Length: 440
Ligand SMILES: [Zn+2]
Ligand SMILES: [Zn+2]
View 1 (cartoon, rainbow, N blue to C red):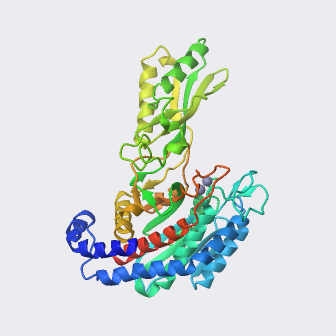
View 2 (tube, rainbow, N blue to C red; view 1 turned 90 degrees about the vertical axis):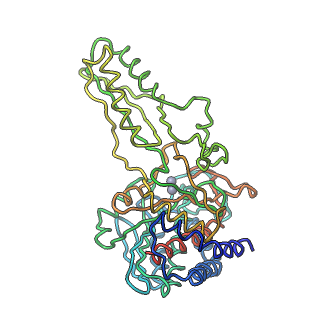
View 3 (cartoon, rainbow, N blue to C red; view 1 turned 180 degrees about the horizontal axis):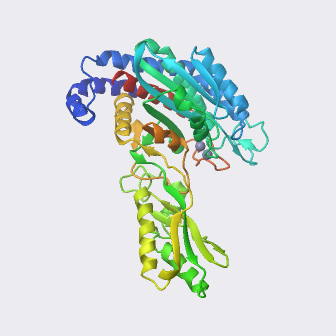
């Protein structure tokens, strides 16, 4: 009932927002018939309802037989079989157990990739669901069983609509996300010689309510890196170490008693990342657990830094150098640098705005949570490596259900999700891809 009402509203207001829409996004929608478009999205939802029970079976099967990074043999076989059953062209063993399915629409057009990660994690804690893991010490506590199922679901839906869509959709099933190796491995194995997407999308489950999705332009996760300050080993080592630790720590702008430190607040409606006044923005934190390495010649002081934006990380280097150069230790300074090469998810601003807009128009405002902050605590996704090559958007998908008591962060021992988020993921992102292909 609700959904239907929203559609009526959509049709009524479509005319008036069209001008604004065009101004903002430069979309060419002339000649497009809103009736036809609406009926495509109705078909999407109808079809998702039809295959939903089967998708749940697939998810539970994947959950029962989770596989660690680089060992996703059974999982990739299941994916391959499903994609072949849809009649797609399928490529396997890309960068390990990576699988790609290729769907060609009614005629040539835009090329879009959808990525799902497929691996599980080591965990000895008992499963909280009835369909418990049968692979000892391995569990899907990051929700990649859900991501894989949604990827297959979207492939099914778009295949059923292929006469109504223009262009090509690539379904990327990526192994080894948890060790941050799989995306790189697929790329190094020639992924982008086989396929040539113009846009790439993917998602991760988070404890927002099931039925919602969230994203923003640019970062959705904090940058996370090890800062390393090296000095010549002089006679005053203790005071030098003390000075440097205090100096680095002074750049932290989050107080020890802040709600920032409790991950439970990430999706809080007042301070969480979905609120414009979120406490999870413009932050830089310094891990107090410094590592000190001394040799006869050198003292190296390092620790982990996280920051909500990359520019802040660059300016930290400059500020540290400046402070040290103005101190009595200036003559001993060798270098200030970051130790890790680790890319961060960086969403294309225009594509993010377009995607949020089309999902809002089709599924209603309450389905979409615009983000204002970046997730800290070292979370990230090697989807970043795909985005280095192809502009794209990474979404958060709500998997929590507060009434059912399902609310957990990925990687926690009791991680659980409301399976209805599979319906949301399949519907929203099938529709989003159709809109993007047909409204070129
Ligand atoms: Zn994970
Ligand atoms: Zn994950």
